[in-house]
Length: 224
Figure 1 (spheres, one colour):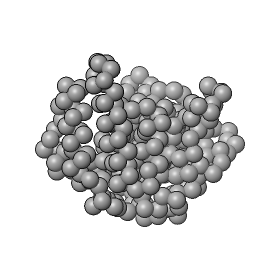
Figure 2 (tube, one colour):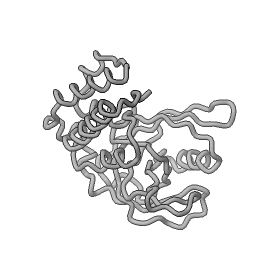
Figure 3 (tube, one colour):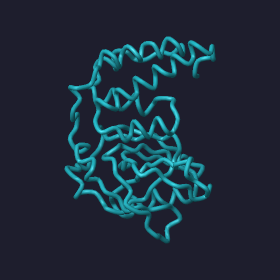
Figure 4 (cartoon, one colour):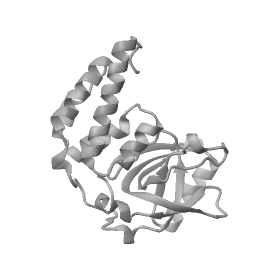
């Protein structure tokens, strides 16, 4: 995980953070998420994160089932804060960056701010285990995870770097597969809010098995 800052607990993170609502986006602790930033309000958000010195952005999904305002959608109550660990300018006004996940958070309240982007007061303490790398990974059923991954790859005519998969620790494997999975916001939110790594892996396996079963019975073309 390419990150210079060390966060040992909730007290080392700001209580009020900028949030970036993005449907289907799942960031998890120590996972890497590439982002293409082009909207002026989010360009300002990135600039401000460097000006403040913390380089932190909270990723969170809009809750479409409870939203009535497209410009300011209702947010899910749980997101994940990440630190900008790579940034490049595109030459046409965009930022190409990578966020590295630090910790999940619960939204206490959205705060009134003069910034063009939204900010929330958040609580990291419910997810204090996120600060301990590889916590609980020994409980993951790695064999079941790899079996369903193999079935998914075959069903969708995809290939994977098996050497990289086999050498990855359970935490990195589960979180990377969850983040890259092609499922919708409800499934992504369920994986985000999973109480531990074992449960996240079980949700990912269950969702994938249901997707595969649906394709077998419906004859739908595989996901691309």
